[in-house]
Image 1 (tube, helix red, strand yellow):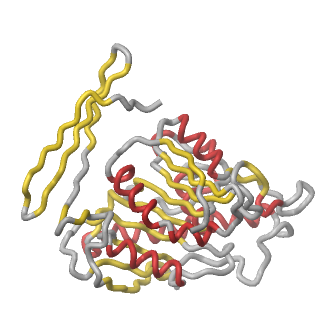
Image 2 (spheres, helix red, strand yellow):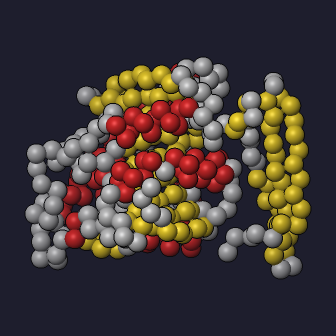
Image 3 (cartoon, one colour):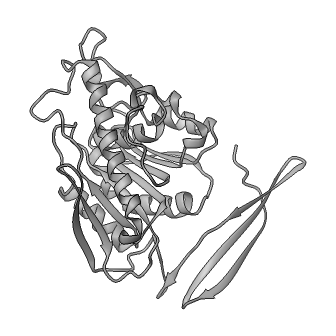
Amino acid sequence: MFIDILLSQRDVHLKLTGHHTKYVIHMASKGIKTFVILMFFMVIVVNGQTRYVDNLFSDVRLRTFNYADTLNLDFYDAANDNLTDKPLLILVNGGGFSAGQRNGGEETNFGKSFAKKCYAVASIDYRLSRKGKSFGCDCPTATKINTYVEAVDDFSKAMHYLATYASDFKTNPEKIILVGSSAGAETVLDSIILKYHYLFKNVVSPKGNIIGAVSFSGTTLNVDYLPEYSAVPMLFFHGEKDDVVPYATAAHRSCKESDDGYLLLDGPLEITKKLRELRVSYELYTDPLGTHQWADLGYRQTDIISQFLYSVVLGNEKIQKQANIAPN
């Protein structure tokens, strides 16, 4: 259980180059032991608005870069933002490893939205190795697993590229946040949870540091492999009736044990149980009647996402929350 008894709270304002930096110090205690939690909130206020929460900029530029082979990424940032160490969001689109694109409508809107809030956003390509092929119950389990590994390898190359040239992109390679939808969310979660799994031993080990993740209808192969030192705050949006990507532990695509493509996956209900054990922050938003539609609907929850990133991922607020959500 996180400590939530506040003995005192002090706000200290320092004026730095026309901005205000706010430090919030929380003093907490439990039993006979006293713990001091220093929560370093760097809140830059410009014209009464807050960086990473409000839309401080309107002029967003889009540039495309080749990061490996034929794989590209679209890079969104505010053209007039002079900050040189912005947090970086890496976005991985969905599509069942057979479709989807880095520059689809939802991906483009998401990139522009968070660039206006002063993040840098990189929406990446990855191999669509199941294009024109099945990824359902007739697709052999070994092929499915290899597809996951390939996607994580591509993601890792993109992250390595972005971290290597962080100074050129004006981003902070120690503040990388992952965002994914469906197949992209599986890629994002596997890259964190299965980092040291033997199946992923040949995946590129990228530069940079992941500090948080956001999943729209995502799962992982096995949450038990998540070590405490790799766990980061995570935000989930998922429908309980999702029969493609399970909410708890269930078969991918609802396949039967007798099917060639039978493969158990751990959904956000199981992942958050693990995070709770590890005392790592998370928020899980569940639609009791929702299906795989949340692979798209998640993109539109920008208010919830921006507040989670600002308070929990960047601000180190401790929270473990589960709540219901309905389509807007």
